[in-house]
Length: 240
Image 1: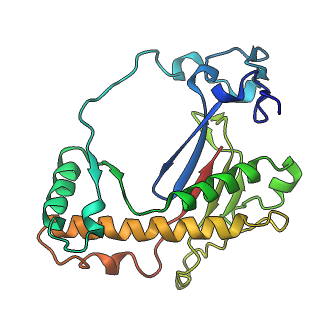
Image 2: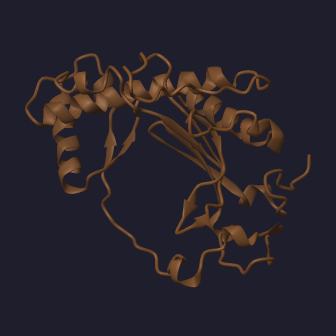
């Protein structure tokens, strides 16, 4: 087996890509060492950078790195304990993080590792398809789910590809709202199943977090459910 990276032809696949997850999105991103500023036509780690992806100097990322200490990391395992005695304390922790930070990281959240792994593998398989096969499920103005590779920042094309989908168990919204229908590649076995499985798991997690937020506000746990059950616009984006 070669050590050469199949994703970008760099010399060491172990140093090329890393994966991470957030609610409803699986992310595969290039290692920071590959994201250097280059002029059009230069070669970067075996990759040539097209002018279409090069930001003007005034819009490029600044070299300084902002750091923050103490970002809340919240253990959700009390949600799954038989006695449930620590749920109120957990809700208070979520409330403090929401007020003080506006976001937090959750661990032991109940989304099975194998579900995340299947979604990540399905994503890699999709973006490894030839361009014509990816384009076969491209999104359009009329059909807004599917493959997309033309996002722009400051009028410069983003160096990424994306695939958007929505959980399928929700009823379509009433007219004149836009109906978001998923597009699935016909020739990629297991892709749809892996994404639907992952979507259901993280949506279940999202409702658990919503209940904790409601508890932190002194409300009954399901008080906010009605705002998110029917005709919601939750979607998943795969980024490459």
